Structure formats: C-alpha cells, structure tokens
Image (cartoon, rainbow, N blue to C red):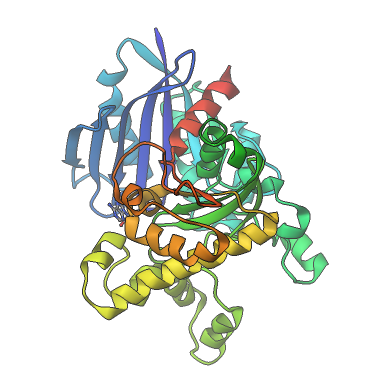
Length: 396
Ligand code: ADP
C-alpha cells in the first residue's frame, strides 16, 4: 500500500492542500487544490499533477461554513484518489514557531499548547493554522501530523539582526524581536541553489519572495543572515494590501489625532494599504500593469524601488552580493518588476539579458548577462515539497 502525505496550508479565508506519494527519492505531488472563501462562499478547485483542472465546485450553501466543513470536503474528495494508499502523515504550514521551533516538529498535545501560546504573536494567522491540526486529529485519528514553521529558517540570523532598539527587558519579556517569515520558501531556494549556482550558494545571495505577501532575505552560505519581515509579516516591502515598513509615528498619529481604534488601524495596514491602497485600483500586479492610471504606475514603481533598496541593505548585512533570486507569483512571472529592480541595481554590477528576462518558463533560469558581476536567477519556489519532506522525515 502506497504511503501518502497530505500537506495543508490554511489561512483565515482559504485552505490549500497537496497530496503527495512518499517515494524513495523525494515525495511526488499527485493532486493539489484549495477552497477559497471558506467563511463566505466556499469554492473548491483541484488540479492533477499535470496542472489540469479536475474539480471546480461550490460547497453546498446550507452547510455551516469554516475550516471544519472545508476539511471534510477535501477529505471526501480525496477518498477515491487515495484508493490503494493510505494517508500516513499530514504536514501543516504554521506561520509562527516563536523562539523555540527552529525545525519542523511532530505534533503532540503539548506542541498544540505551545502553538496556542504563540497566538498573541500572530493573531491573524496562527489560530487558522492550529484549527486544521485539531480537526484532522479527530477526522484521521492516529495519523501523525507535523508542523513546519515560516519563522524557522530565520533563527540563524545573528542576534544583533534580530533586535529592535527598544528597552532590552521589555523586548525580552514580551518576545518583541525580528522573527521573519516565508521561511519555507527560502528553505526551498536554499535547497536548490547549490546545484544551480554553487558560487552563490557558498556566497551572499539576496532572495526576493514577491507574491501577495512579499519579503526578501539575505542568504549567506544558504543560511539566513537578515530578512525584511520582522516581528510580524507586516514589516518590510509593501505588499498586495499590506503597508510594509512604516514610521511608527504614523500609527500614534492615527490613534491620538484621528482617534482610530486598533481594529481600524489593523484594517488600514493589513487590508487597505500596499499596492491596493496606493493605486486605489487593485492588489493584483497584473491589473496594475494593465491600467493606464498614474496611481497604478506609482504603486508599481514604489514596489520596485523598495525592493532595490532592500536588496542593497541586505547586501550590506552580508557584506557581499553574489546573486539575486526572484521567486513567488510576481518574482517568477513579472518581467517588468524584475527589469525595474535590476535597472536600479546596475550601479552595484547587476546586468540582465532583457530577452531572457522576458521569456516565460516554469523552470529555474539565469537571466543575468555573462558580464554581470551579480548572477540573477528566477527560481520557482515550492513550499509544499518542503512540508512533505519534513512530514516524511519526522514520522519515519
Ligand atoms: P501568495 O502570497 O498569495 O502565495 P502568489 O505568490 O501567488 O501570492 O503571488 C500573487 C501575485 O503574483 C499577484 O500580485 C499576481 O498579480 C502576481 N502574478 C501572478 N502571475 C503574474 C504574471 N503573469 N505577471 C505579473 N504578476 C503575476
């Protein structure tokens, strides 16, 4: 009987899943899918390994909505797909591992308690990561579950780079430090870089993970040296709807003079800012490129400008710059943003081949010229394979 691994990536409004077969060399992806709008109007979509859409359906409107119903639906749909095999492990993406979890961990009732204690550090994400762990514990009793953390990859940052200039005791007591996120994506890039570019893998590489959520990390010898996200996933680059770094004085102004409460400020910074807020049009990069509105162009220009500034800052943190890697939705697909960023880094020795940059492909590829001092790569990320591998390893 085949051993199957279910990978779950649950958020506040969607649940993504992938089903893998555990194989000797590396897990093989069989199916993937997601339910969007889990609390509003849930829609289930699934694809096979060749990316053919094989399901696209609304969940029954009369059922209660939420993680529970959605996970039931996913497991039911997977039933005939798992014939001749059994789900022998479940891997979960968990956003926050605090200072304790620097590696994936087999989930026990004690681990669940420790994850619950981390909710105050990530109140918008952690509860939605924990809910499926509990639900699947009941639906598939006895199947081991493994938690993989977005923060784990960043625990190698030097202590100095994890600090804020706040009173030391206060920061220590409240756990206020730079944690960093998107770690599973960076770990994937670090896992393939040695084969693609051994010099970059041994040297200093800036990785730009540019999606709806965006961040960048400095990888020295494939370990995290610094990253743009900090205490929360709000810091650093502007994102689809998040502001990125902002003067803390703006928040005090919102509170003291505009009399906004915490929820209003949270909505402003997480949901109404970034590309959406600046353009007033969309959080989706494709729609911004398609628009002729000056504010759409300003939002795109600001995004590229912040990426190039952070690239130089991360290079300074490593005292070196051998390679720049673009990944995730925008990083992998958007030749305009890549060209803008690279143009702004020309003074540092970045030179790309515009034709190679414009070519579309799902494969890792180098787009810098032979003369470029800094190698520039596009590497499609794969966070799910990192979770599947960790699940296999931790239940073996
Ligand atoms: P998430 O953070 O939700 O995983 P993704 O990595 O899927 O996000 O990235 C979503 C972003 O990628 C959106 O802004 C979308 O516009 C952008 N994107 C996807 N395909 C393209 C494309 N062909 N050209 C430009 N941007 C794209």
